[in-house]
Image (tube, rainbow, N blue to C red; front, top):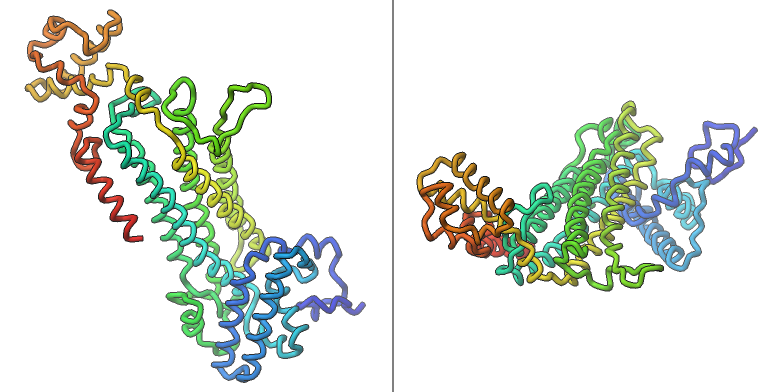
Length: 467
């Protein structure tokens, strides 16, 4: 039986039409339509290389490029007005563009795919997409950092308990606490931009597996498309999805950090803490309880973190058992990539909005301190007077226990009790019980003291200013 499907671009080998459900099952056009611009850009660069190699004439080159630009604009318009037909018999964006081009300009359009495979074509499209998407994502991270930095600058002289094991630890300046978020995101941004470096290698020309059968100038193509290098091995090139996996790894870490920031803000907005007030624009109410103000936006950030982790695991699982080089399994790589980036961008927007609008109740933060947070200062005081730190630590711990057993604030412990525990105590011990003074005892680089914090803010300013 002769193959009757004239839209199939690989049907010469087959005598029967593909099963109708198989056509639908194998199509990816609804997902990879996102790669339209990358696909057209890659095709334009490819035909320029074919013309440079003498395989196309100048007039054929101009006709194909003009046709590709028309196809690109037509598809964009149809997508915008909702009339685009997702023809699954054409499988993907590559065949969709090529089919439309051939219908538009005739047989010359059929020369577009000369010496090229969809294996290296999709690898190209994905890498071109990453070269653009990753700097955009990094810019959104920077926007959140700017919001954090601005908030930190306005809370240099406010104090908040720091926590380990969710138990009060030491007094820190609120600006210092907020800047912990800034530096987490700075590392995320570095990883995102670093992932771009691995994507910055031209795969086009690798062909199906062994390289193109035509002498195209790959360095010319790389320069045309803005790649800094060409891939070294054709088999590795069409097998490789490392740049996608690295992107999803970086995005997963970003989401983990956004989730932790969200968790802090969620806890701080609870009645039990009362450290902050969520902006109305990023909160919701209850259908039953009139008093409720729920931090749903941040809870969704936490929830979507798991979704992005799933995208990473999906791609790792797809790739783990594949033989070299290309296998159809790899068609499933795009949906988790697009999903992760879309959700990360949305979460960054939410977190920025919350940080811009949140109000910190600095009085409540200050009044929430348990005096036992000064125990470390007491231990350091004794150490500075010559007592070995482990012994000083034990003395301070016994004083904490005494204050709790006698229901007495640390700062109100009678001097004779201090003296009973160590003869090294003098009247100046009571100067320890000042929150800001406590932070300033930790003014080394990276510490929470005022001088150190101002230096930290200045450094952050310079980093943001260079971007």
